[in-house]
Length: 549
Image 1: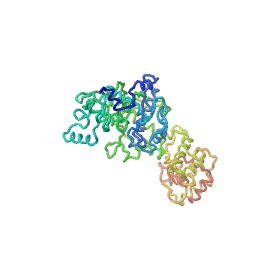
Image 2 (image 1 turned 120 degrees about the vertical axis):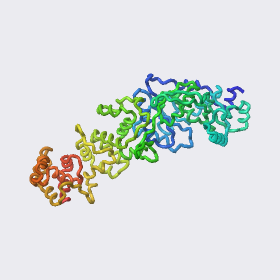
Image 3 (image 1 turned 120 degrees about the horizontal axis):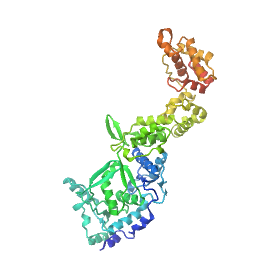
Image 4 (image 1 turned 135 degrees about the vertical axis):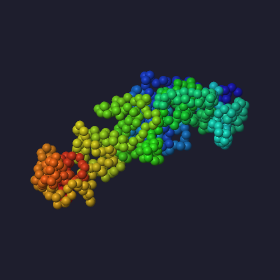
C-alpha cells in the first residue's frame, strides 16, 4: 500500500491539495515591517486581565506598524465551550476599545479575507494538510485506546522516564500498511499522529522577543494532530492558521514556552516560515512581601468586570496597561502630557521578562490623574454611564440636575493643576452627595474641627448671612469679607497673624471658613468653598445654616 492509498483509506473524500489553500490565502499586501498578530482565545468564558493585557499589546503592536490585529476563536476542544462564549469575548474587547481589524464579530459572523476565523469551521482545511502529511510519510494513524495510553504512562512514571508517545512507546508508528488496513476495516477507532523527525538528544535554540534566546531539547513526541472527531489539536491547528492567515508575531502567555519545540518543528516540517514569538510573563501581585500570579479566584481585579463595576475609565486602564507593558512608557508619558497612547511606540525589548507587578493603587492614581484632565461634561457622561448600570438612584439625580452636576464637576477643573478628587466613577456619589437635597437627609454627621461649640458656630453662621454674604461678590471680595467676619468675631484675619500672637485671638480666618464649609456640607474636605456657595445659591445656604442652627 502506498502512502497515497493509506491517506485515502484514513481520510476518504478529503482532498490533499494544499496548494488550493496556499493560493486562496495569498501573502498580505503589507509593508515588511507590518506586524500581523492575533488574539486567539477559546470560547470557554470571559476575558480576564491576563488575556486583556495580551490583546492590548497585540493590538498596539499591529497599530504601530500599520499591520493587522485579528480575533480567531480556537474552539477545537468543544467540551469546554460555554454558551455565548464568543459574544462574551467580543464584548469584553469592545468594552476596552480594543477593536479588531479582522475576525469574529459575532457568534457566527466574521469579517476579513482570511476566514473562517473560528476553527471548527476550518475542519476541511486541517484535514487537507493532515492528508498531505500522511502522503508524505510524516503522519500515521494511532489505534491505542485511552487505557493503553494510561498504562504506558504508569510504566514511564514507575521507571522515571519521560511521559509521552515517543520512541519505543510509539507502538502504532511501527504498524505495517497491512496492519493499518485490517484495523480500519475492522472498524477500530483511530486518531492521526505527527511522525516527529526529532531527537531528544539534539538541542534547538529559539529566539523569543521578550525572553531572548532559549535552548530546548528537540521535540521527539508523536503528538496527536487530528482527533477521532475529525477536529485538529491546538498545536496543529495553530500552525496551519498562523501560516494561512500570515501571522508574523505570536504574542501569548509564557505557559506556552514549553510548546515552542513542537511548534517550531511543525512549521519546519510543513515547509512554513515560522512567526516570531513573544512570550509574556504572568502579571504578578505582591502579597505579604511575596510575589504571586494574579489569580482569577483570589483577586477581584483579575476580572475585567471589576473595572466596569468600579467605573475606572477605559483609557485609564489602557494607560496603566502600557506602564506594565513597556518600562519606558511612564517616563515618556510624564514628558508628553499633550500626547496619547497612539503617539507612543511600543517596543518588545521594553517588556519585563520577569513579569510585571500589578499595583491597584497605582492604577487608581493613574485613573485619578486622567479624570482630573477631562472636561466637566466628560466626567458627567462617564458618571452617568456608570450610574445607568450600577446605581439607578444616582442616575436619576444626575438626570434631574444635569447642568448643576456639570458645574459641580467643573469646580477647580480647567486650570494648570486641576483638583484630583475622583479616582473612579463609582466613588463620585460618596464624594459629592452633600450637594444634592435628595441625599442630604437624615442624621448629618458634621465634621467640625477647631470650633465645636454650637453657640459659637451659630453666631458665625448668623452674622455671615446677615452681614457678609452677597451672591454677586467675586472671589477676592468674598474672601476679604471672610476676613472681616473673622475680625468682627475676635479671630485673626490671617493665619500668620494668629500664629504670631495666639493669645490675642480665638482662632483665625481658616477656622471661620471651616465652620461655614462644614455647616453647609457636613464635610471638612470639599472643593473650593466659594464655588460651592455660588453653585448652591443664597436660598440653599440660608436653608442649611438655619437647619443647623
